[in-house]
Amino acid sequence: MTTTRSTADTIARFNRAFQERDATLLMDLIAPDCVMESVQPAPNGTRYEGYDASFGSWKALIDDTASHFEVEDVHSGDGWALIRWRYVWGPGVDDSVRGVNVMRVVDGRIVEAAGYSKTAPVVAALGS
Image 1: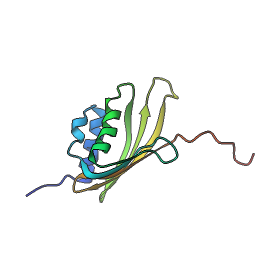
Image 2: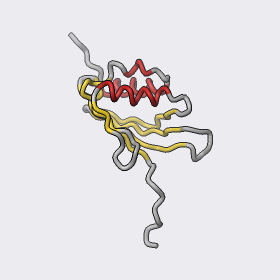
Image 3: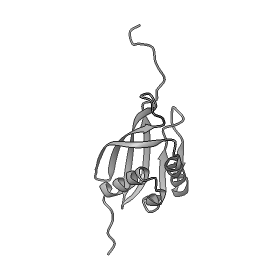
Image 4: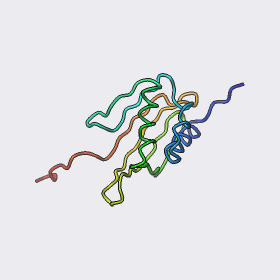
């Protein structure tokens, strides 16, 4: 009998891969038909289709030692998860951005991931 990881377990291991900088932890978490959309470039991000493309994109983030992710909060259940995070690239207070990943998990594997961040351009004050 095969036991499938829960959504919470899958997402915990996904986050651990980034915290420990160990891309091998992702290897059996990504579905062959995974579709991932990154936060950049605006307005739609980049779409990665399939295991190799999704793994390659996440591995590049893990391997980038000049930056890191801080997980702020995780909510998961019934095949969906929301990860709230901060992406840090320097020591200053303005050297980070907050964002979320919306993840869909089926049979213990990530089938869909969409990243969103607070990187909108500065807009004119409302009512001016």
